[in-house]
Length: 326
Image (cartoon, rainbow, N blue to C red):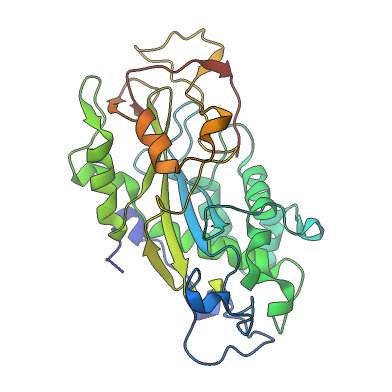
């Protein structure tokens, strides 16, 4: 895997080690070399879903750039989640209603992860609710679908432990994916006039992992990025292999996620509707990368939105009521 870009700000924040993660013993011994998700070996019925993630073996690490309201630090994108999509682009959601935990801060603290909770409050925020409301959604919707974090995969399981591990893994991976610095190093910085092509942005972000990324935009605004990975063995081992996602991911009901407009020189402060582009039902089956490219042609980064620059494209694709789908 290509080396990750890690900013000095994020580098100062420690990654988890074996002790902090709790490197849990699995009930089932996974013999031999770790099996990579979405590989031919992962399909074998002889390989337990505790030893390799299946069917959700294509992991998407997604990040937000929110401007209205502003969330997170000025020099960093924020976490959306880590999604275990199927290898063919499909996905499961809400896989275990009995593990839809609330009060996740307490669960993290009970598992010795108070520092992790503090980090998440700054770097994993919602733009229309509390940070914890987004954590609860991401865990119940996506985290419960990670097969290698099933309670039966633990020998010392206690309720909520797998959720704490999930959040630790997501945050540690996020710290290695510094979208803001990758764009800055390529000369893609906030401006009230300069535009960038989607190809320029994708080229800059490819340097983060060495693989193609997918960018998502709304109303010609760049606001989300997707990094693709496979996982060697259990997710608890956090052994990720960067992958292209354009050949796997397909449009679903939550691509792309809309954001509210920025009240800058390019928008009126009284606008009540959310300008954005949305694919028709017939387009949902098309590869995500093709849909996104139709949206993201030229990117304008404006610096007139509150304290945080806005990533923007000049064209509009219609309006729908403002909302956030997470």
